[in-house]
Image (cartoon, rainbow over all chains, first blue to last red; front, side, top):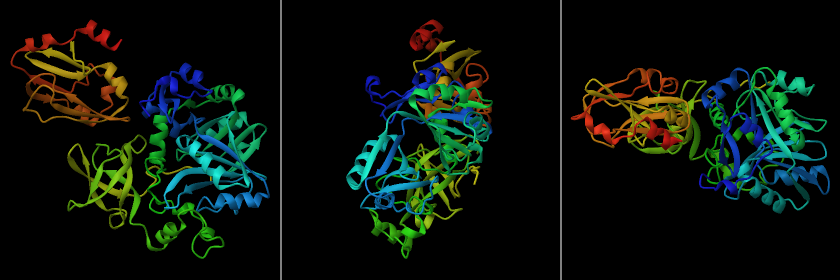
Length: 373
Length: 119
């Protein structure tokens, strides 16, 4: 991605605002995006946890799914792509989902919302073209409509509720994973930081003015992708393409909480999704390896790719995301290890610059979440 | 003060060379969260990786600018890596070296030449 020529990059609506704010623009998933502002990643991260951070996530894919038949036919068609209960999701509620492939690997992770007569889906930027093609091919009875005229902003942190309420009255009453259409604004009470907060879809023509009004609220600062990554890592959330991909199953990824009872063995709509054979088997028997939290001893970060070993030197896995957690004030990581070494408290070694350093399997999140449940 | 292409600064202090990273380098690295220093009384050769700096973004090295002996390291950086961002050319020196002949520094850039490099 770093090799992409500047002119090949796609540009988003708020680019001028990012540049005015001093954003350092870098290529990300084919877009020109702010990785940080002059405050820097560390302060932006801490600011989000202390007050409120505004993130431009307009590169993500917003998609509307409309039924050609009944809404229940649409929900069942969407369920056929995921080991997730779509039919049981109430109107005005959002849920985490995962597209799986026939081998039980993960094609993408996503958020979907029941909006009564249709579904609203948000997918990862790097996967959106493939996701749209996949949904279109796999759901002939569904109109797959990419939303290309809206920005997506995330407002996260303890100050998010008051700041957004001042602009969009009513949002304070929402709970975690609620979704509301308020005029032309689509608001979800969710995010990717472990903090209470919102994701707000705004028509592109209004996006810059809306972002400026949010930034004018007390405590709201612009936050780049760098802090977005350290925030989600502290929250124990997966980054697609790193912590989960087509080679990892949802069970290995420790995302079994996302697989509702109705889709499991003995459930009302058991199986019936790509890779069901492997995923149901792993649910029953346990996976060969598991995504775990990792706390390196000392201060040296263990980054993506660091090899993990048992104390006797046996290779047991690899770090998939790692760095320094500014709120935890210590290095943190996540990765996959063989199941025998995956229990909390297991002591392993991670190889950093040729030296094997102690690291302990730890519960996630690393930082307590503050969702308004 | 002299400068290397690797964005280190070199300052002569008595018969020793003090080594740190430039403000430009510190800004590019971002917030430094971890510093690993060499053992004092280590003989090093030009180009040896002698320090590790980890920022919120990535890991990078400081190379020995010349042959010599590490005689002192700045332990403050281990306890407070953020000092590298706060005062890169002052309090955040990394190590002091003894070299055979201080004229070995003549090969490096002066302030103007370094400013041209990063400008």
